[in-house]
Length: 356
Image (cartoon, rainbow, N blue to C red; front, side, top):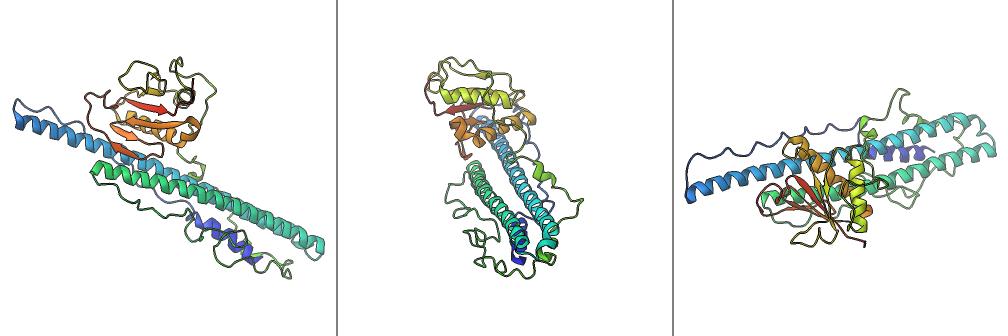
């Protein structure tokens, strides 16, 4: 029984210290565009102006990447806190089981009932650990994509991911749980066969119980991915759906429901490339796009589409001169001209189609 308490406590502690970790402050907004140059002409003046704009664009791209990384960091902290809160509740319930059944363990029926209760708590522990491992793998992939994004801004060639080989197991857990198909050492649950101590308080669990006043951390109440923007495709979309393909329609409806502050979404139109004419692309216009709030809103749209890429059939996106893949990895594009052509004022989102 003591080992059961050790398993539950080890899984809870694997999700991090109680209360979560302090997040880094949100980076400052990028500096404004370089001021207009004084009178001048010729190759030197043109080069100076071009260099100024290039530096400004790169700093803005870094600010956007910082925002994406901050969102992922908050998401990871929220996920960890949520699972830690789940484990605290499981441990508290296990303690309550022992306290309520302890007096009956001097009979075979009482012993069996307590064993069944503790096994149920261990099964709940296993489910929480598996869910945490899956979330850890997802956040590791997102972190690798963020690293690649920073490298792209800095012109660093892409190589193997620094997180390559990450198996998704939580630190200190060895990828599983004893006696439940995993690792974590120990190879089982010693002590479950000998139940002579069942009539005594389960001190291993009692020591894990939190005070009655303890509550789940603020991070635990934060939905993974940040915000309360759920996936809803039941309502109408802001773009005219005539000519749009199946997944583009779903994308249109989901964005319209999740982001009511977005008032304009473009759909089918003539274009030199086939995405819009074929009903595969949306132009999601970002209000106040040239302000910090506008950039943040565009980043949230991108993150929303990445999180729901499977359900919405996401193919790729372009936002603020970056080509963004469904897994969140991004690469800088060459300058095309004005803000609209460089996708500064809208997110260009493309679906895999699905037919009309």
